[in-house]
Length: 595
Picture (tube, rainbow, N blue to C red):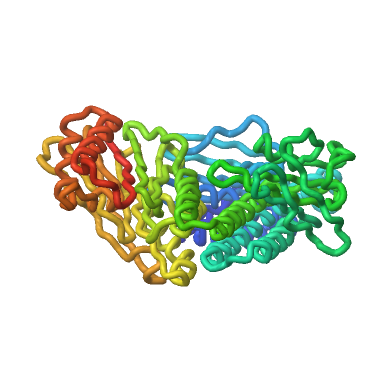
């Protein structure tokens, strides 16, 4: 970090400080601490110093978090000016900028965004945001606390601002804490799902953990009966002094919120203003303050309902806690269905049902729509074999028109592979700060998943590509996955690019490299799983990578857009396979520069 402090004499005898910090979280944090020390020398109170430190940290962190990769080498500039009456700060960043909202209010507890801007607004008297194609500047201004004998500030207003800021900080802290605890629990339960057979014991431990993390006072878990006609009680927590809840029939007209949630497939909330009906069976077991009922499904089939309740009427469940409920119960649903499958009489019925569950999990991993990334056009396909495995792809909007592409293959088949595919997808999506650096993203995912994958002797291969439409660039990294294929007009054949590393779950400290490739107009790239290159025809001959390279070149030369190229590839693959059954999933993502 470089600093240049200059003093200037103005009408109010202002002093100024200018700092240039590298575009890194640790560097801007160090710069804000240096500003605090400088302001302390100017006589600001501890309350003022804390407010300025928090506001500058929030603004500077945003400058680092949202900067594009090609501008990360530019510094974050912090300029501070202090006079007798006020302090003014200017933070210059090189992000794409954003539209400053007309109104900034305390976000709802269910909202995941907006608290940063609210904190900055609450801790300053005036905020201005100047947006420019080259760089942006945020200007913050706050009056200094007057010396003894001066005007007395509005204590009520200051106290209200402090309370609002404290509430926002508490909400953010609670969300971060619950997200961490949820992730730890997911990994523990995912490993237990492989061997656990006692559904009630597993459900009880999971439900107790959920109650503790979500700060609930009571919980009820009901499961769909074997005949599919009613909801039967499995657990009521806490157990001491709780009434036995009779089953509730799905077909009957009932005031039960559990039946309502199951029929409408939506969460139902209840509180003092909208209480449970007097004939609702839950009244005998649920705290009366407020609560939420969640119906859960697997492969589009109802499994049961889970209800959480609190005694306090003025403390509703937050968005983060509702997400915890969904995550925990969805994991529980997989174990419940697995246990039922084990009770089936024949191996054929067990296998068929397991494949249906795995297929449902696999389908749920796929994105509902393809993000727009012009001039780069995307098209994807995932074709399942007779036995469902751990193939999946993901298309994640990464801001400023960029998209993160993920294609992966978890070793094994059935529910365990599909489950770990879901965990891998959630892990990658939880690290948006690393989307522009695919190699570091894979390293972080490997560190997170290594213990759970190695414990059950599983591993996963993955290819991650950050797609930047502004320069038509691909930044790619591979963890033991099939190579990225690339073709451009004028080439007779496509080529494989990039280097591969260890699959996830093999080496705890594995390092990965990344490759940057520019897609000129008309060029195409293909991400795929080994179900394509290793497919066999009726004679038992494997397609191989060389034939796949030829097919990509023909698809690029003979089609004009990505969708036509995808249909061309799938058609040629089907022709090669003929009547031979698929032995593995076939998943692909096709990229093309249509400029």
